[in-house]
Image (cartoon, rainbow, N blue to C red; front, side, top):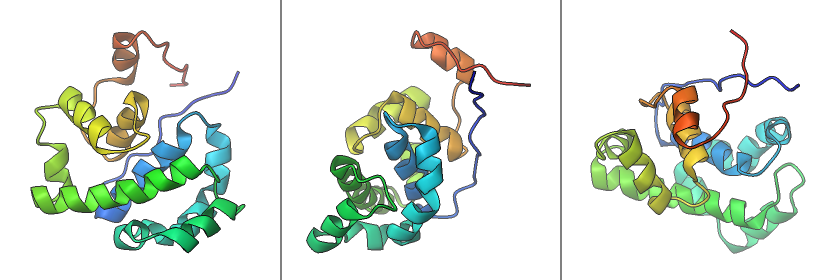
Length: 158
């Protein structure tokens, strides 16, 4: 049986950190996590180190090149989602005078997830949980969260 470990938590230093964690959640959606992890160093390269302004400005020819780039997962909808999400991150950071302020403006985990699912592409409940966990935001205990949604938690070692 495959072992699952909690992903690393970071203390985001800026929008690039948020965008990278969010983009990883986008690529994990419906994918084998091992494949995503294997391609992650070259995905970081292809997306300009997740610099939000650089990613938000990816258009036509650069997007077409990404869709043919074997260094990344070439799912056009996910590649588009990363660019769209970069644009939304920038907008929400400006509107709320900081992205962390945006995250904390919804009265808690459930409100944040509900709004994130409206604001961002390819961010379902699991992706939002992963993102908020990795970005060191308050989230319910994983086992409790799974049970509240009728999921079976992954077994993990202690």
